[in-house]
Length: 336
Length: 240
Image (tube, rainbow over all chains, first blue to last red; front, side, top):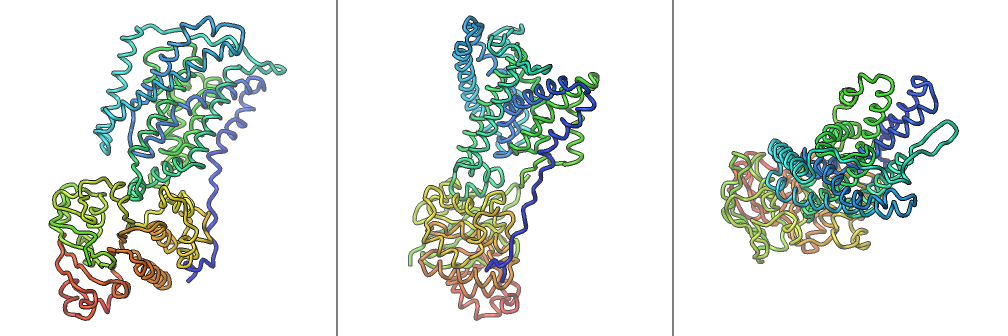
């Protein structure tokens, strides 16, 4: 009778904090190994900033997989397109970007970012309708179609902008560092960190406080039942796909400014990194993607400082270690 | 009594399997129609095909005279069908409240109707803000049914709601379904529990090998042990 009358209490939900604490544990563990406090702070801030940029680029990919079981190997194309579109504003208005005024710098940076997001989002609409719609539920064909899409996008960028690397200097106000004692914190890294936190918070608010977010969370868990309740999940998916593409475009501009250069293969270069993050985090999990991005960036930065020879394989090693511990990723989504 | 739902010669293929092999059935408006049959007879497949979760390869499905066999699942649901799958399919990561908010679609939750639901399923009130994944099996089934009735629906498709539940919960579910029936709902109910079937059913359809092999009054089947053994391979009285 207890089930009907509910005289008992529910089991307490398990709080799985260990994965969330991993970046903190890793950062603290690095203090004695790195030795110098200022180097540790610099590397940690660099890791956080890099992690935020990777998260922004990868967040859409994890939701796209979680919601519709779509493997989009062409996600990197949105990153590259976003970066190139950003140059359409930033290079012609280089005078504004190199002015000493923060407001003038922002007056050119903001439209560059917005245009990159708009074009990447619109490209997402085209890719979903043309490449992905015909191959729903067919993983192998999805991989072939989206990889082909990435190659086509890359070649189109070569054709339009040429094969050369395009330098993209940071706006003047974002150059240099804030100096606190003997610690230097790069201004742009701080901005990337803040922007990443804003995006993460916004995604969490949408997922947890809005009806659309409810639908996305429910759809990730059981899309068939969401449809049986009367919701067109493919329309919702299209919205998520476009938003994810737009975020990848934003990440593309940020990454290009971080590296101060744009090249056509940056999308395919970053695709592997982004997939590692999404797999580490747990396919479909935004929180896991966030932690995964931070871990990948930390391992790259700390590893590059401590054992430079391992830098190239550090992310793969991290992924292997995480998957041996948790085969479905740090925060596996219930139904996957 | 006019028929709310009719299926004529419905065939369904899943992969290379021919699951439904010409299903003909009708569900009269305002009545509860039981769908019985052995495991694998095609009962769940029939409900999934009506909902559009599996596309009928041929045949006609009509709801209130409107053809729906080519419609998408969300459009079918929005014609006023509430669906309770065998797996319950509650959203484990969402709270009880969030599950019902989604089920109510565009309408806000109706407090009076919620109180009515809580009358049958007090556990849902108590665990209103708890994650559905933490509920017991019986409580999840309550939530699954509550989701289907949180707004008035023309037709309820319910797949084995009493499966694996304790007798006290089964009794509560039967009372709930009787009350829903009294309010004029039309129900197509797949059920293996004979007590529940006899309590609730006005008419009965029996399936075997993907077709309907018997249709008639539930009371007539309940009274005829030899017919039960012929159709279902067992006596319902001994299978509760």
